[in-house]
Image 1: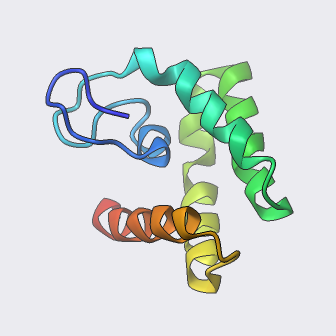
Image 2: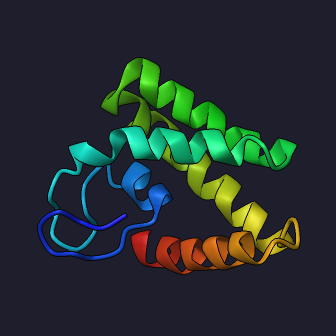
Length: 108
């Protein structure tokens, strides 16, 4: 996903943690909401741990932006646990989770 204003590549999880705003310029990314929900749905097909992200996606769909603030601490904790365990051996998942961990370290 790319930011509409600055063109920065944004990870789907970054949109969640930044309440649908670009981490670089702060532009609200309303156009990516459907794509974000699709990303959560695709994760659901991999393993039970990834279902957590799918559940977060459903929560966002049902309750909107207020749900993002509510699940942010759990997302950070869960993502860190996944990254440390390097769950699965799918290269894109390891790469995605690695980028997420580096980003989470900057976030806190």
